[in-house]
Image 1 (cartoon, rainbow, N blue to C red):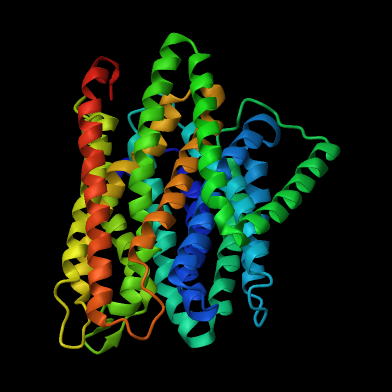
Image 2 (image 1 turned 30 degrees about the horizontal axis):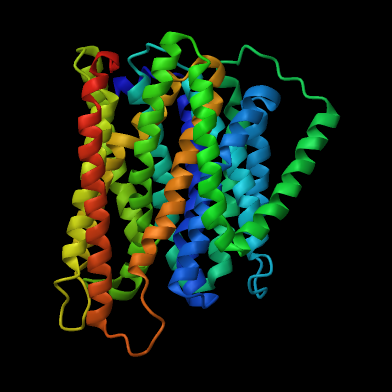
Length: 477
């Protein structure tokens, strides 16, 4: 408790604002693949491709949002603009009986809103600490609990509400979450340590940015409809981004250049983590919906509750990890960030190895005991706590002050490319749309796919383990 009380006064405000934003996002993220395959009658492959494109764009767009916040709008104004866009985007999905007419414009508006909102909250939290503040990792871990509390509330409610009132009422929940989040931020903004730069934005500049956002929504709508384009366009954009980061890194002074180099290695390794992690909303989500026994002690569990369970584990283990990093930090024994990343990716491999083995033990009805999924998600939780909040903290430490917003955007871009590849590897788990496919065949497909995910994670962790040795003299935390 004393650890929480010692945190900056702005932490509860940012905690609650982010919690409600994530609530809205995870309502949509958790329902999308189910909505596309069950309501819009998309094939697994088309659903995975669309979800991969949306996820990628939603996490890549913060790169631009971070730049606008750093250079033009300021963090607070960008958060408000992003929140308004998210409310509109979620509302578009909630309009009933339109097929997919507003489906893609709604997703595109969510992409833009997320791009404006997401990097600014994390960056604002980073400004509340001195660069060498030992409270930093603990604070970001507490903040991360807020993210997962929002995800839990989304998963625990959206599936049941969808079942009772329909898909569109489920999506309407997301808009409500954003409204609450913006109210919290507006009321509590006085607690923030003010940024040193006074962002006065002329009306003509605001109009240009709004116009640019509308044009971007139109472009994103096209890209999401033509998912084949995103399969080559986004990887190509990734190559250009990598070259840009190399140029930016080389332009820095020696100390900042070394820190940026380390940060780029961490960001690259995180792509593999996220492409496997996101299977909770891709292939694992359909696996649970189709093949996992959801009746426990006579109570039916909605499919979305399973990903919500991972958030429960985060909330249970998050304070333990926050205390651990806080204690080890004061004792000067905190493991290096790269060591935490290695362990995080390895735990992801363990999780999907367990998931793959679950497919070998169906009951007489061909269904899997849900305990397998909960155990797998427990290990995913450990991996997530070792990598995600630590990565957010690392960005605010390793990036030079004038590049924090942009590099926070790059961090989310890496998650976005994880989304691109999540859609690609999820196709390993595509079940053919044929009545001739037996339950045993479906189980075999998922077993092989999950085992492949596990092997990819273990291989990446091993590579990162050996890469750290020539960098030892540069790794200070």
